[in-house]
Image (cartoon, rainbow, N blue to C red):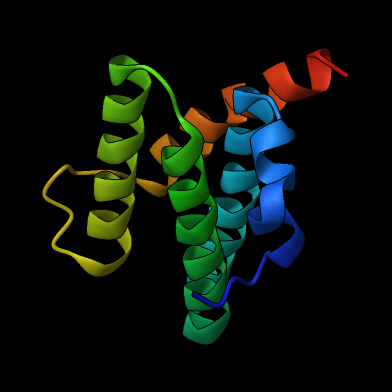
Length: 110
C-alpha cells in the first residue's frame, strides 16, 4: 500500500500516544471540513483520505475492544458524513468538538 505518511506508517505512528494520534487525525479532519466549507472538494477529499489513512494506522495499533470499537465507529461516521447519506446526523461542529478534546489532551501532555 502506498502511504502518504511514509514515516508514520513505517513505525513512528505506533510510538505516539493515543491522544496524539487522534489529535493528528483531527487536524486532517479539520482540513477536510475547511476545504468543504470553501467549496474546494479536491482539497477536502485529499485531507479526508489522509485522515482515513491515519485512522487505519490507529486501528492497526489499537489495543482493547472498547478502543477498537470507538475507532471503528468514528471511522464509519466520518465516511458517512463526507461520502454517505449522513445517517448519523453528524455536523461540522460535532466533528470539530469531538477532535478538539484530543488536541487539548495532546498539548497538555507535552
